[in-house]
Length: 174
Image (cartoon, rainbow, N blue to C red; front, side):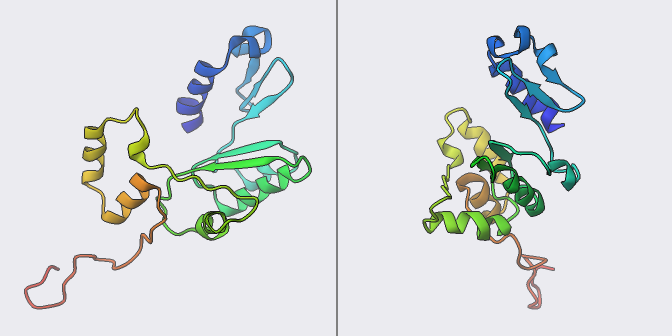
């Protein structure tokens, strides 16, 4: 759904017709293979994390973009795809799953100055297209940890007590 309802309409909106085969989206987009082919011979392949791991294997790529956190095996398999081309990978995400493998493998090394990792943290409030009132309404029902992740892009531990408000003292919250 994300590919068909969000990503493809954006590509259709922003891709100049001059880049498409015969200026046509219909002739350029192969729905069966989820591939957008361009007049110059380049292409964009749209994949999802629910595909089997072997679907990501076997082909060289120059650039891979992950929209939201991929499962580690998919990330690793895709990394192998850019080795022979000296290609690059981008990962854009909100760390809503907490302190996952991305924190240990990418974020922390990048923050500590790893030569081949750039980390850019963007605050939700820096987006000029989001309404301040809508942001407040959205955040109103979230925990403090969820707000840190969603507003500030911070990795936070999402675990803890099963019942955070449980108080074992007589008369406490149960």
